[in-house]
Length: 250
Image (tube, rainbow, N blue to C red; front, side):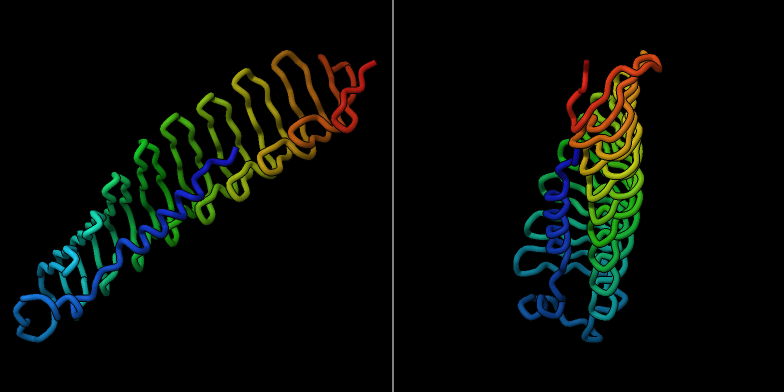
């Protein structure tokens, strides 16, 4: 049940970290035809600098560093529009990739930090908190096929309390760990069945009760996503038991 977003997030983290680092104006100026500033530095001014690799910065400067509102366009096609501080993306901004990926939100020291929205090529998107380029805190991930998670994240993975609605309308509400359903939770199936109990690594594991809409119940210990040492009731009447995952029917 774990969504395959870890690798994507890790890749994007690298892209963001590399893509938004600018070239220092001092180095660029050595090979440029720009006239010398009267004071010898870029300070409290607005200027365009084009770098040797074709990258371009248009915006404010302070103490020879990008500062204030500006636009960084890189030769790779990556583009950042927003606020700068001390030569780094810092404040509100929009980062776009040539492929169409887009992040809109808060930056701190060249990384997505705070509230933001990340949109994928297939229309999937994450809206919520970021920390050091990763989904971290409370957020909502909506996948292109209707699958939706609302809850807590840690280091880019579902972790803590959350609600996951599947594209086939099954729904789980409860605890997550490292991207998987793990801990105490309730899984409601589209046909009305409901499991309330413990989970481990995305599977029913531990004490739990599975109840159907017509009064049938399986109550007891679960393992490997199936009744292990449990009892089956039908309308409140004992039916049979499970021992080590095997129904003990007479």
